[in-house]
Length: 357
Image (cartoon, rainbow, N blue to C red; front, side, top):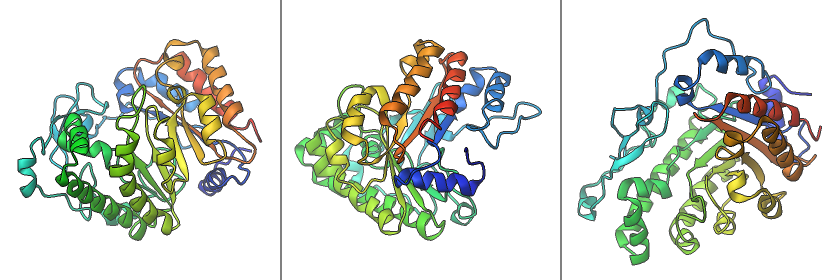
């Protein structure tokens, strides 16, 4: 039976994370904002309307609404985030890149002032009183009170602030100001976590940033262990001590970092499927942590057939799923994916959600 009420969805999600025999595999299909000007809106609405399990609250609009894009995903309009990083994008809805790093020179560090977590997130102002009246910002856990401290919270935020090459050299050189910058970030992140817990009564805290590349990690395991993991552990422990579920997201190849990463108090790990290899994920992670599997957005769903898309989802459910739980799945639709493949993926997610029921 597929749960429809918020209470039933919440119960099923918790049983999935806790390996307590959920009724179905939680499935999330997220449509990136850029899709709305790359595909006909009517076609996307048709897909949403015909897949009520994935979009239980969808009501077809009478007309296409005016789209408002996140400031870091608005084409032609540079955005300065609370850390002073300048972001630019060329396509509305697509996350931009940093074109100006506020600490490109350490000479500016003495006067560098961090933002205040009482009034802003990593991405802009927040009204905590208003936030407390909402379930939270997460894409896939809308049935729970949740807090997402923001993509690019530590490792990627260091890159945003200094630049990738400079951060790698800072680590290699043992630059003392780097540790002070990491402490600054950690204090801000912990402030966000505590606000979500104390003011918003969060049950689920998300920590999202990418650590892997297409092949290999973005930083060495030893640098992760020395500079990043201790901060991860401390701020995640704040959430764990409050009884929150700790959800961690990272794109890219995590093979070299997985043992270090799992030294942190993680309940749910969101990682990419084909980049990491399903066999490896099954061998290293199944039963060890709840897997929130990020379904391929580079190969089969873009270049394959609808039949291959269906087989991909079925194979992943067969290999990683279990009647006891421990598997969630999410797919992000971006421009370039044939809509017949998107439809096949939606069909497969609905079909195989109850594979173990």
